[in-house]
Figure 1 (spheres, one colour):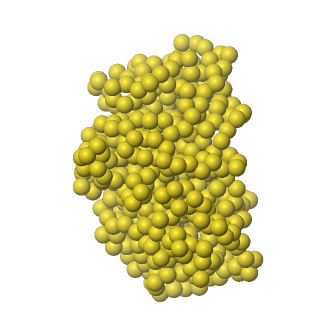
Figure 2 (cartoon, rainbow, N blue to C red):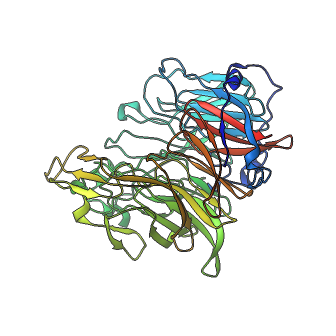
Figure 3 (cartoon, rainbow, N blue to C red):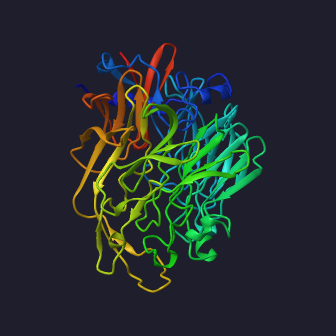
Length: 529
């Protein structure tokens, strides 16, 4: 195992600027292929697997990885202090595109040389990070803190159009990466735990015109609406859509998870399962119509949403080839569903959890009333931060394993308002014992195949797997780490200057395979010596 420290002399790379030849548009066929010479969307392709078929960097060569370049970002007007690069960079035809709140960049993927920077003059709103952009042809799309979807010409960095996607009066904000499906730009909104409904929008990729909006609640009068005590509670029930989903082109389904229910934690005034908050839903991207749903977290009273990436893959399950979707949910449960109909095939804990009394006939966990918030407190695992969170997992088709950064921890959940129609957040703490681990889950059974316990807590990195037999992830400190994906042995690490914020990516240009990771406010690129 070799540790690589980023050399101080590479800091000069961050100040380079220059012009390249005009960038060429994204071939839409790349979105349907495993990523090789491109990384054209948030998860590398539509599937959400974050798996690369590249093999130059492998278990035999990984110790020859060395720094290639680094690029440090600066904030837009009005932003103070160091930024966090939460975005997964997109790489198209040798150019990287990435974002922070209200600012976007184009940078040479071979050298780290800056090509252009775009600033959006925000009228308000706030967000800790922006998770990235989407690209269609020669246009880049990203969301702003004041709830706008902005379209930028990738060759010039100039704005083409912008379109409203939310209302700042409701404390909506844009943090998610848009996903482009044909001529639809799909974008969700974040909320600030107020009693407003979540929704997903589709905008015309050419004009920005709103095509449809799907709200995270059922139509009044339907059986699903009966999961709420009344229409008022249902239409103020949360379910924000702040993480990009995944797309199945064969079924023409856009599959995503929705956020937590309102009021947060205190569920006394909203008895029932509370669809479609904390739910995995499959929508038709042409119409916004719901096709199926599965609720990992019925009647959420712990601030556990279900936005974690739903990962798509085709595989043999119990002797039959199936179209599957898997999620490691924030509530500590791992699910494998048939993605043609949303039926559960596997429901199993992947982290410490004590809030259920089993699962129902649908494979959905059954909440235990004793583990909901209490006036005197209830000790619950996972904690309010969740067993998993927004940072993306990975699925390796070679090992058949699903990889996730997991947290074992407890919160004490309190009720501050014991009335029949409570208001507000209620309360919890995140103190006490906790453990972070990288876990590899067998999709056939939900059992942990191998795990690596970190020395400290707070791992918040996404994951990349490759056909070279490797898994790349950030640890809770400041290291980028490579594991043998089959058995969990550490084979390499690089010491960076901050924690890795999102999933590493990889791409091949001019016969060289690059490994790229964002840590703090800096992009780090590695190549084989």
